[in-house]
Length: 176
Image: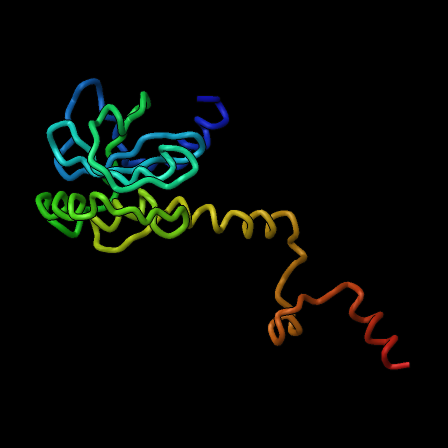
């Protein structure tokens, strides 16, 4: 993995994520994270060295189904971290049951039903992707940083059209 890509992915890891060392087995029902090209991939550890995950774009541009795979296939020759930032709303058996209940589902959607949405649903009952949320706020943050003069003005608040630097000139031209 390139240094820039490694840096982008490592920025998405959380402070509480723990690197899975060597051949150690993760705790049952744990949320696993591994890096892919430009994003983090998520899955639920179900025991027996198996992970349930939304394969998504793992097989190319066509989204793949929820599947149960060996931990080594999930890792895809990358390091694996155990995400432990927030406690699950369910006990371990229920997390595993929820994960396995969706095996075979083939409704992958990058922005609304991806591997992270799947894991959050298994653990907390609500599908959510912090990566997608960060990606969607990125353009707004960039615009605010580099175009600080763009602020909501009275005209923008009324009709959704930004105030233009030419507004006064145009208004005066219409008055004559």
